[in-house]
Length: 514
Image (tube, rainbow, N blue to C red; front, side, top):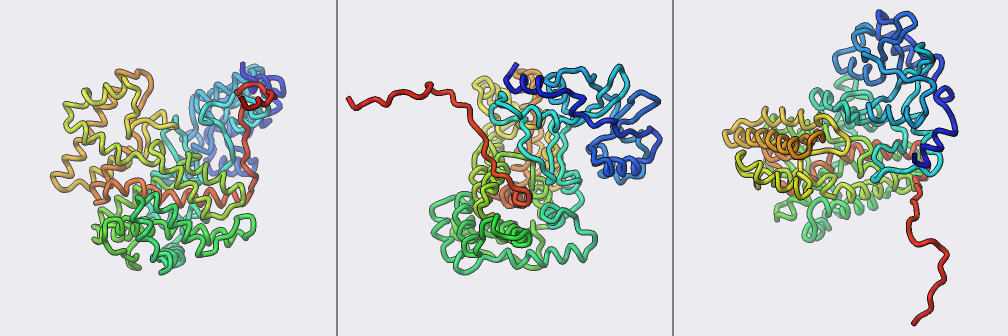
């Protein structure tokens, strides 16, 4: 047993952590009544009862899915999770924590001799487990470090959301400007007028000032666009006069966030074009976000199909839980630094190939394989050597990556030319072949294609060069970063974890020179 689990066992018990009595519902009640009960009780779940027996549970996840399916008009029985797992009140807390982690539960009904007496949450168990010097997993995997309203990733379910909405549903139904407003302001536009007002607010922020534009050629000459963005964005932020988060009001923080989100795509496209020896193109007022991005990048006004495909990619990559770059940005924000410094730090984290740098490498894998009959010859030796297969596997998802599934459909939709259809067919054959090899050599691992695999295919079909794959990722992820940074600043505590020293025991005498 780890030290942390020992602390967990001795400090408290399930009955001291659980919500008791549980908030309950009957199977035939309207879902709207249950949602109201969750809100009034400030709980994340409701136990569905039949007599004195728990037969199901309705959680925040079930409510989100009901909303994505078209509303809250149904009955509880149509949306509840069944069968329901329960946990006995006498269960040791380390066992309860391990069980909830293993099964991916956020809430579990607690029973005493079979009768429901409360509900325990994973958050409460994790909070108690964090007291004392716990055995922290490498890379902080699974460690809860903050509360957030921005969004979440539920890896075992293959589901992620932005605030209360499915991220994939948003990518399928809304333009990126709407989702941008959701992430920064917490609400989608209710009507075309609200959408137009937000677009009008951010449009002037996209332009590069003459003084910043004057130094971009020198930056582009010595660095790739994503590397150059760190310098260019620092300069733009300094020129705007961004001040420390702890010294400014929420309204000023929001204005700074909108500026950083708006200027980032323009800077990236300018750096790319200058590196190629082309002139910088200003954004066009009549074009939407994604169409403008393709225009500023390529100098060609895109087709509606290509603009929409890129827009869907951008929406589905805005945020993805406490990934490395988001966490990096929040650490810097916790020090009170200005938003520009926070975003630049996040860009540095994103530049690593194990985070945002994989789409072009996934296409390189396709190039190396060349034809479906070579999949086993190329991939099997890589797996046996322990090499990472770019475009496959994810730190969170144990099911299919929902972004990959959506982008596969996008790729099929926009593949009109024979060469495009050939690329998509080859990608799908490669996906199936690589999974077959992984399942054979790594049985039980359930490694599947991640977002980078079909992201590279979609971007290539839309005319985005491989050098701009990760920068394109950054052009949308900055929105998610800023949403997290504003949340951090609104309720801040400096992030200052501890490390476990494993070196020689101190104090040692300091040796003299020989």
